[in-house]
Image (cartoon, rainbow, N blue to C red; front, top):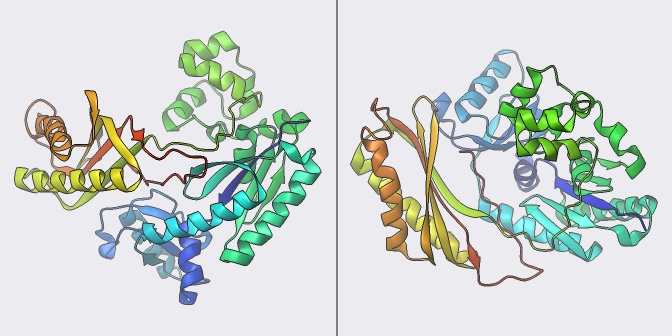
Length: 375
């Protein structure tokens, strides 16, 4: 029996929910994210619908940039963007409903985020049957939630995930094992999971732009260029991925962040915000069923967008509010003096997260909670 994996990715999930719930938004460019404040907003876009993406606005686009792109479109005679604030509680509720539908069709499901999941469908016995199952699943999601999903079907998670983005929105792409290497060959290297902007620049400097180029590089050369990751990419570009579909994927961290309306180095403002972040993190830790953490990570983004993170791992796990505040404060104080901020740069964003979590309610049916992070 062949190994067959699917990856389901909801289309422009946050924006699609807002369009569904507010008919006036339909047919207009829509961005879900921070308040643009007439171009002076300081957050980011969480997501955008496909009309807004045509303007160049994507997830994590600075909201001030999104505003400028909207204004440029308006001046060109096109519809301006409608900006909507994020409602994570609503999106999480809808996600839970969608994932319950998915689990009615597929016994083994790994929820990868609030709007995507992997499914083990080898039991269908063939790619043809898997495709029929997925078409029924897509119809059911649309019938129950009036939302569309794109699905990729492949011999492993790697191929399935790339395939799910192939014909968005509302797509269904099947890549059989014998087709997988040819499917990958012409794709930009950036589509290989793990290749970010910095790695892409390193590879492009060597003339490596598409997967076929990367596949032609010998293993020892990749390891010399990229270290241990070289071996991982050597496997991926050959469509090899043995990672299992895990029925429960535990969140790796819980975090909160705040972008200040005005860049600041005022200790009173920063300490007050740190207290708010600590409360938010502890509240979410308990709400999501975790009873302790060991690692504390503080992230600071300066006014010039230089971003630094500092972390400390405790000797013992805890969920104590005072302990988190103390450790967070110890990590933040160097950013107020010569140790981490010798040029006295103003701070734009403060973020706090905890890692190495201990879960008190682990079960196959648990639904991981998505925490959008743009640090």
